Amino acid sequence: MSSLPRLTVAQADALADRFLEHCRAAGVLEAGAPAVSWPEFHAFRARLTASFEVPTTTLTPLAARVLYGLAAARRPLTVATLGCFAGNLMAWVSGPGFGPDSRYPGRRSLGLDVAAEPVALAAANLRRAGFTPGAEAVVGDAFDAAAHSADDTWDLLLIDIDVPGARKSGYARLLERWLPRLAPEALVIAHDVCHPVFAWDLRDYAAFVKDRGALATTTLPVDDCGLEVSRWPG
Ligand SMILES: C[S@@+](CC[C@H](N)C(=O)[O-])C[C@H]1O[C@@H](n2cnc3c(N)ncnc32)[C@H](O)[C@@H]1O
Image (tube, rainbow, N blue to C red; front, side, top):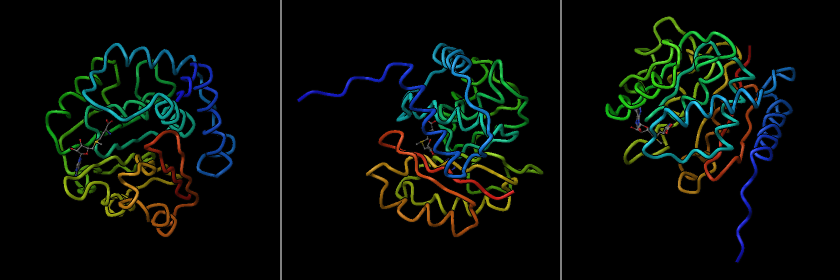
C-alpha cells in the first residue's frame, strides 16, 4: 500500500487559496475580501514555530493556512476563541491583526479556557511570539458570554470547546449565548465538524446556524477535523 506524498509548501498555499476562493463563492467572505500574502504568512509561521510551545494539537498546516487566510480576509477588530487551550488556533486567527508585524491594528483577541495550566501556557506563548497586548488568554467558562464581552461585540468567533462527557455537543448552546454579541458581518468558525468522533455531536450544527440567522455557511474539509465557516448579516 502506498501513501500519498506530502504537499509541498507551494501546493499547500495554493490549496488554501482554493478553500478561501470557495469561501468567497459561498458568501462567507465578501467577494472582494483581500487575498493572503503567503510570504507574510510564512514569516508569521516561522515566528510561531520558534516561540510557541504546543503540547498537543490536531491542527494541520493546511487548516492553519485557512484560519490565517480567513482572518486576513475578514480583518476582525475583535476575536474570541472559545476553548483556546495553549493558544494554537487562537494564534492563527489572531495573526493578521494582533501578531508581530500584523497587517492591521486589531483591538481585542480573547482566548478563553476553563483549564488554568494551558491558559498560562497560551499567555506565555502569545508574549514570547510578540503578539500585541490586545491578545490575551484568560481562564473562564465560555458559556458565560456576558462576563467576557463587556461592551465588545465580536467580529470573529472561533469555537473549539471539548467538554468532558458532552464533548462537542455544546457548540450550538454555546453559540446561542454569543449570538447577541456578534458584530455585523461576524464570522463564526467551528472546529472539528468533519471529525468522525464528533459527527453525532455536530450533525445539526450547520442547520442550527442557518436557523439562527447566518447569511451563509459552508463546511471546509481541510483535514479530518474540518471547519464550518458561517457569516452573519451586516
Ligand atoms: C480541543 S481543546 C482546544 C484546542 C485549542 N483550540 C488549540 O488551539 O489547540 C478543547 C478545550 O476546551 C476547553 N473547554 C471545555 N469546556 C470549556 C468551557 N466551558 N469554557 C471554555 N473552555 C472549555 C478544554 O479545557 C480544552 O482545553
